[in-house]
Image 1 (cartoon, helix red, strand yellow):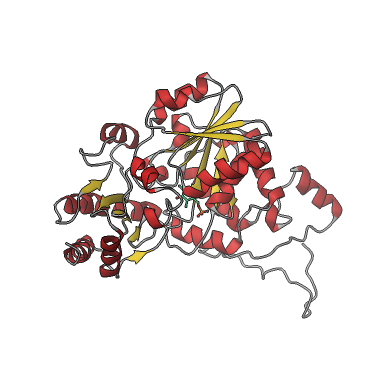
Image 2 (cartoon, rainbow, N blue to C red):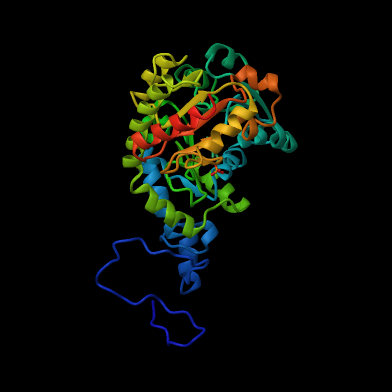
Length: 396
Ligand SMILES: *Cc1c(COP(=O)(O)O)cnc(C)c1O
């Protein structure tokens, strides 16, 4: 590129340097100077690589996207995933990129709350339809397939009851019927489960959660198993404006550097916390897929290969006053509607993710007023157990 004459308003290229920064620079630039129309043309037709406009791509998104591609074991010839502005924009891009009016989606009935809303309220406005069914029962689930079913959407571990979908049999059924299988892998993370290795056609993440891991960046990622599908999804993201901010990508890249360490530490803590909770007064039930008393323990063993993750749920007495008192007493632990943070967070489904359901509908899922979900973090486990035990002592 030709050297530019310095002036206040005219933009400069960064100074040349034979050395390179160890840390990725943040590239907030919305637009890129392509020099002349021939080069811009070549960039657009793909014969040379170069950024043009940040909604279409920027270095910080590329770098973060490549890390997730690698974590998910994406084959190099399949192309790459797209980083999106949130986990929900990745879910939106799935439908916008791959479906048409008239298509039907079959989905798990305990997906992330906003995904359920998108399926049941928004898809019908666009001429598509969705059926929600329990994916722990593969036979019943597959019976809900219709001739116009184009896509199955699953999460492996459900929120907040931590049930495990029978994804092996559903993946076989999807293949037999020529239906695409998409997996939202946010809860499990590629450290515990890699959906592309098990027949998924599309994988989605909310990077906001454990992958970025510090509750300071809202981002998503979506990738498919073929170049054509990745292209359709990418085009939907660029056209509908679902792509990601450079600063959030930069934060996520920084968080991702320690993802595996954080996962392993948080999971070790979760195993210990689940066992400790089971012995505490005032705890009626503990749900952790790595405990033999979990209803899907054997399936979890098989699918997750011993990596049961950092999410633990437990039940206090079924009333709101007990829940209020418990969360107040455990005030050192954030009561916040997220998961996957480096520190432990609590959430309460009845007042947040599942507040839209009736008491009976919640009861059918096993969610009472005393149901507590813990996203176990990386703090000292002795401290965490002590804080929870002390908080329980004030309500029992
Ligand atoms: C949080 C979450 C989402 C949505 O992600 P955002 O980044 O908050 O938009 C989607 N799926 C699952 C499983 C989630 O936990």
